[in-house]
Amino acid sequence: MAFLSKSSLALLLFLLAASAVRGQRLSHKFYSRSCPGLQPLIRDIVQQALRDDPTLGASILRLFFHDCFVNGCDASVLLDDTPFFVGEKNAPPNMNSLRGFQVIDVIKERVESRCRATVSCADILALAARDSVALLGGPYWAVYLGRRDARTASRQAATLNLPPPGESFTNLVSSFAAKGLGTRDMIALSGAHTIGQARCSSFRPRIYGDSNVDPSFASIRRQTCPPLGGNNLASLDVQSPTVFDNKYYQNLVARRGLLHSDQELLNGGSFDFFVRSYSLNQTAFFNDFSSAMIRMGNIRPLTGSNGEVRLNCRKWN
Ligand code: HEM
Ligand SMILES: *[C@@H]1O[C@H](CO)[C@@H](O)[C@H](O)[C@H]1NC(C)=O
Image 1 (cartoon, helix red, strand yellow):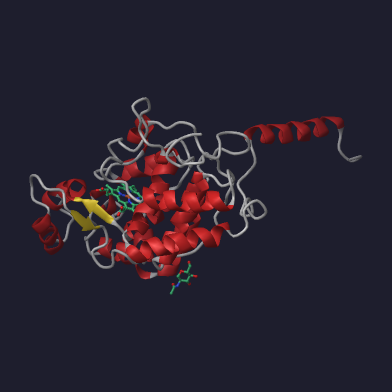
Image 2 (cartoon, rainbow, N blue to C red; image 1 turned 30 degrees about the vertical axis):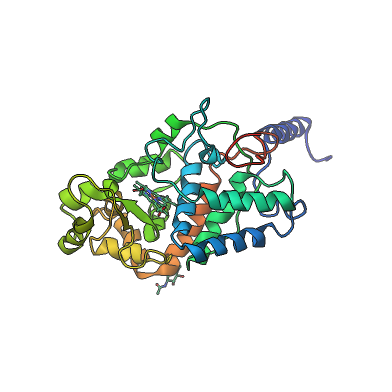
């Protein structure tokens, strides 16, 4: 320490203290001592759930996105409404749309019986989302852990922060930028729509009104999505809805994106480069998707002594 001047030592101590106040950083090994075997346990439960219903993988992945974009990855999306509490589940972007909560409940129950009051719901969601992607054929990445669970949620923040399907490219870019994510991250993360489904109400304006749509694709989708009434589901990826692959981008090149926001990614600008390169090179997509998921998972986590480890993901302790 002799080489440190008094003022630089003071600065160092200040920085250490400041980072302690803000809480620790997330780490891959957060539960390696406190809950050994956590990750295989979660993977096995997700695997069983997807064996029974492969469409649940998409739903779990989306839960993680809708958690992270609303006041950070703090499991706020998992809190149930009560007569005295309004949470995020019934905000317009989520209501009658989010699913997969029962899988998270099963994981939480099994994790609690192995490691009591140790593993947060926010981390369970991050791991279950990663496992869903990997089990459906997508990439695998090491998940940073150590998030804690919020004691509150915000219906208004959910409404304001989750981009709607009619969004323009410019607005998609700014809604991701507001979370510290770049345009390339936004384009790679949208590749999550290589799995899962959307309701007719989410894509009706596109198949009846957009001009940048393949006519035969639009006409197939109109058969189960009438101009008025009815809210059937359709696959976001017309080719392989339960396989995590790069066909989403091939669809965009063929003007077969289901949501208006999907097709906006190929708008004739310089970022078309990424859509085209992902459509040709699945490895490039998988690499960018994995790093973007890690960045999304780092959005404003609660750490240290902030928040809590919920015992039941649907309610605070
Ligand atoms: C870029 C902006 C985005 C918009 C505008 C958007 C919008 C939507 C909409 C409207 C749906 C269908 C909901 C319904 O009709 O019930 C949907 C589904 C889905 N979204 Fe996104 N999304 C976006 C980004 C993302 C991201 C970043 C992820 C994850 C990394 C994601 C994952 C999913 C998944 C997996 C589904 C299918 C869910 C299921 O089948 O249960 N989305 N999205
Ligand atoms: C595909 O992308 C990966 C990762 O960016 C790169 O290393 C590889 O060379 C690319 N393959 C082709 C055929 O361009």
